[in-house]
Picture 1 (tube, helix red, strand yellow):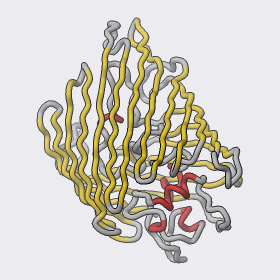
Picture 2 (picture 1 turned 180 degrees about the vertical axis):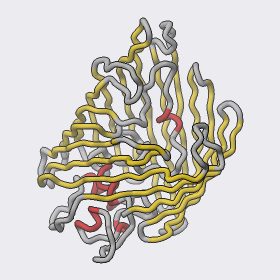
Picture 3 (picture 1 turned 45 degrees about the vertical axis):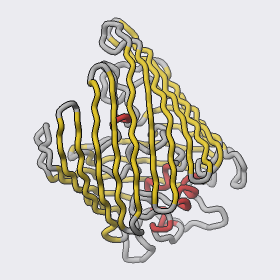
Length: 365
């Protein structure tokens, strides 16, 4: 499982798979420490244990002196979908163009910016832009971080940067009735983290603006989120809870979402399961309360260091959208040191059955 300050290094190092060579434009962290990207990844963006520890330590390697390089990386994603786009985009598009700026402002201060130039075939926006301060020394048993800015919420599975499928996790996209809140979009605020995320117990507590981007709704108070996890060898247990208020006509929707995660990794197999429930005091502008639920389970198998397969089952349920289910099957292959090709088959029941084939080619520098 990845921690928030940790999640960063791989957002950059995880973008590419390149060995250091003068003729190549290579991502920041791989160049900075003269490492091949396979040191942290198998098929991008999947992290190994070394990559998770590197991120957890604020993109630094104790005892290793980094070279000075410009802290920039980029990722381009080309996509094809068999399902016609409802807004008129062609089936084959330049799906994403991202640029990243990240590094250390001081030995204990990290920064990260993730900017979408293109997102979903359209002009993009800033996703993450934050600064993190580590208050403890390198060898502290309980590292302590404070993060400020716009950042992806801490969850058992990263909803965007490290997701290997083009199909989103339905439960993290789920919005209930008139409340636009979802776990996919980043939030702006402060987050305190205590503990390392690659072993033992760790926790995070966040105070966030009560606002959802592009919703058109005013900011209402302060949202709060708590996240805790315990890494027990190959098993990671996690729990989270988010609560806030949103305007709903003449009413205020006081809502919460809470969930549990279980990850098991052994050898070439990794399984990840998330179950979530929620409650809203007013979801329809008339003061009607609502319960919601959802989750997913996925299984990943690494055939070798270049080829992997993944299957996932998603489900959500709420009063407005009813019961929705989907199944994803994917095969991914590392084409070269800095490129990946994936093909996935998506079967959705929402409630009508829809069958979609997606293909992606991702390259990073």
